Image (tube, rainbow, N blue to C red; front, side, top):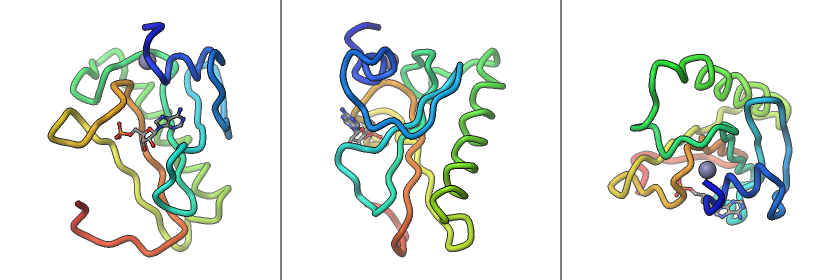
Length: 114
Ligand code: AMP
Ligand code: ZN
């Protein structure tokens, strides 16, 4: 998946403002932030979307949300609250086909989303 934008950020072939990294995941600032805090948490393993998740990814998806939890605390969002988003497929507004969790906060969010 060398053409995949997020795989290229993971491989450091293109720059990303990385805020967290471990053996299985990477988190970096969204290039076009929609909120004061807008971080993308991605698995290092290429998975096209949430629709492509399998049982073998059970631990991996859990790890992504623990990372979201700790980043939210580190950015002082835990008390005020924050939003997590996973856009899936064209109807879900997904534009980059490498599974990622948006961590968004720092302003009041509204519902319903667009
Ligand atoms: P989605 O629409 O859910 O697939 O989200 C893709 C996100 O990736 C968008 O919020 C983009 O702003 C973001 N994005 C696109 N290119 C980059 C990049 N080079 N570095 C960081 N974020 C990016
Ligand atoms: Zn990828």
